[in-house]
Structure formats: C-alpha cells, structure tokens
Image 1: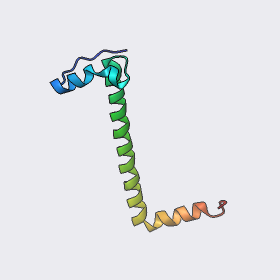
Image 2: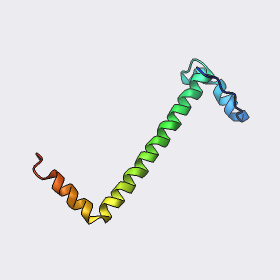
Image 3: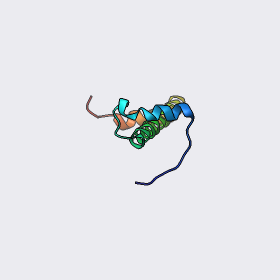
Image 4: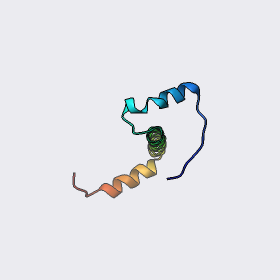
Length: 77
C-alpha cells in the first residue's frame, strides 16, 4: 500500500484520534474509508448529471424519440 503525507486541521486530527470509537483499527483505515466514500459520492453525482443531460437531450430531440420507439417495437411488455 502506498503512503501519503498530508496536513489536517487540529479539529480533524482530534477527530481522527477517535478512530477506535468509530470502529476503525487505525487512522489510516478511517481516512481510506472517507476517501472511498467521497469518491463514490462524486461518481454518483457525475452519473446523475450525465443522466440529466441525456434526459434533456432526449426530451428535446424528436428524431431520438422516434428512433427509440422504432427500436422497442415488438419487444415484450
């Protein structure tokens, strides 16, 4: 596993010092979990924005709606 050196504010350091109270074996595992959580949140937000963009494009494009209807014709309901 790679190591990284970074600085935190005093309140953040105090929070990290309570890693055991939050069920973590050490500060590093707590930070890794926080990074994973933040990464997942960002990815979900990007996915939501992408879906909104596709929805907007679809709703404004009659040719795309027609193409979609043609593609689903005959599919089981």
